Length: 143
Image (tube, rainbow, N blue to C red; front, top):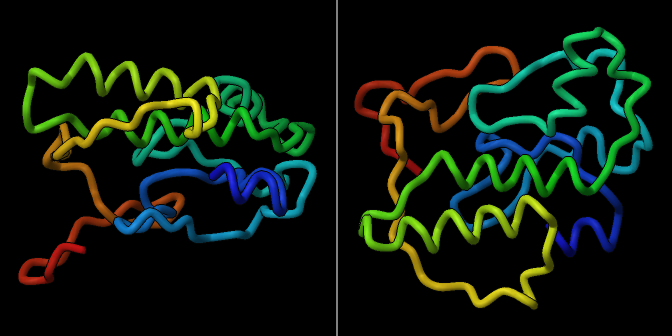
């Protein structure tokens, strides 16, 4: 996310469906834009929008909202919070890391401990579209 911000600016749609397990960010529809498009009207299940963005969506005035890096950092921390450490003794460290990410602290300044993670909610879809999250099809391998 730091690299994306330094090269092209805010992403604008950070959520679980737009992150690959290897750490890559996908779906660059808004990259390079200065404001959210008027068609951006979704509150997502696979993460959480920055409170400023959610408020503008509720008001129907999202096209007046400037794309900001702090929105991406907040959304990334909320995606991280969909997971929990397998080792419950590391829960406090995980929450501390999520809080630091929400504030946009560069990873260079963070000591990144290793976590084995699992989803907090087994019903959370791992893939989906902006408005219609979908669950894995039976028999399909998880990515």
